[in-house]
Image 1 (cartoon, protein in one colour):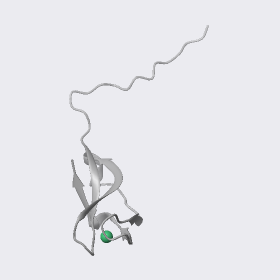
Image 2 (cartoon, rainbow, N blue to C red):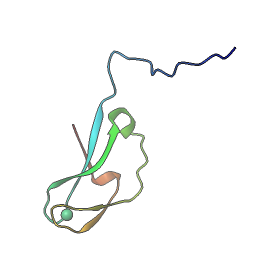
Image 3 (tube, protein in one colour):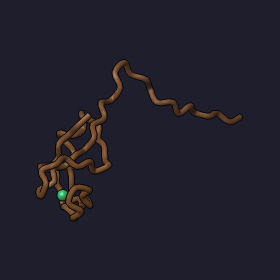
Image 4 (cartoon, rainbow, N blue to C red):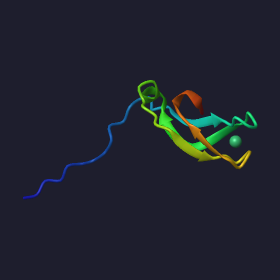
Length: 73
Ligand SMILES: [Zn+2]
C-alpha cells in the first residue's frame, strides 16, 4: 500500500514580505528594477554576488552588489 505525503506548505498568519530588488543607475540616478525579488526577512543575511543588469535608463550594463540595492514593495 502506497502512502503519499501531502506537500502543502504550512500556512502562516503573516505571509513573507517579498521585496523587489532595485538598484540606482549611476548615470541617471534612477531606480532600476533588477527583476529579482527577495523575502525581506532573508535580506540581512543574504549573500549577493556581483550581478549585471542592462539598464533601461541609460542602456549600459551596470554591475551591482548588495550595497547598491534598494528594496521596494
Ligand atoms: Zn543606467
